[in-house]
Length: 333
Image 1 (cartoon, rainbow, N blue to C red):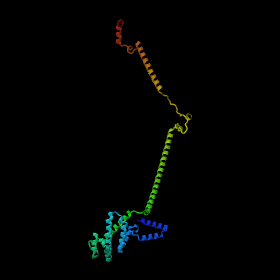
Image 2 (image 1 turned 90 degrees about the horizontal axis):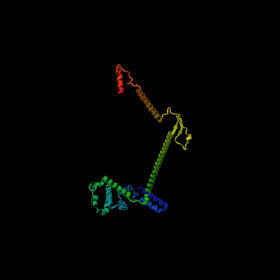
Image 3 (image 1 turned 120 degrees about the vertical axis):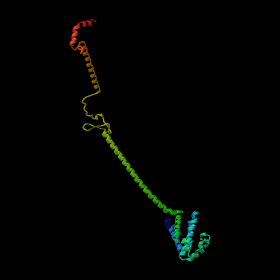
Image 4 (image 1 turned 30 degrees about the vertical axis):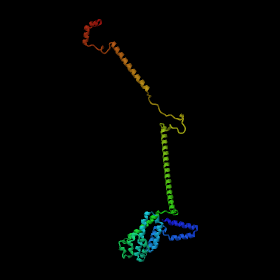
């Protein structure tokens, strides 16, 4: 609740700005006697301990009544038992400090003032014996309250209880100024960081797109150079004669220089091969016809290899002995 002090400063500044001098004096006087201590729990606990150490029973009761009317009565009914237990523990702590400070008159004053209120409560029945007990620190009903653990636990529990209430209680609009201002500054800082991050991402995206476009343009240029290189025709001496791809304006046929390609040494075509085969077939047929004519001529002239061979001696003798008869019989028969 530190922002409450800032809010008090705003109110004081506004009252001073308006010239409300009497209001400003009253406001400063009430701030000095503020029992809530600007809702600072540590200040309230310190004030409570000062009242107990000073044996100021009335001041202690007034402080608790103020807390009860401004804070505790707004709590839900389920917290009533906790508030009552804390109050009773604070009163017992007051008696312990009075005994340890050797203040029997303060102990008697306590019971004389609060007896009508405490007599109806069962947990206080044994405590009415407290002023008459010689060694209350050894009595089973009072010994636990003399331990440091119990006293520290009481103060810590009260501190946590008040802190929780102050954090949950509704705040006036003017007290939210500092909180909302801090939240607004935080949101503005986050917004600035996000904008910077967004600009960085946009720049990276633009750079990546530009690099991709440059790479694509470089690839297209390289491809066009390769295509132009492939389209160009070269002569035997390595000089470019023409290109099959027109660049801008169409190139006329008269501007194209033909290749200097020498004719082949021998002209060979299918018709020539067919003519050669036909001549070969004709020569073979003519040769075969001449062979048949020669064979017939040899047969008719008696010059065949069989009829024209030389006769042996026996054949000549036989032919001499019976040649006439045989030939005449063959002729006449």
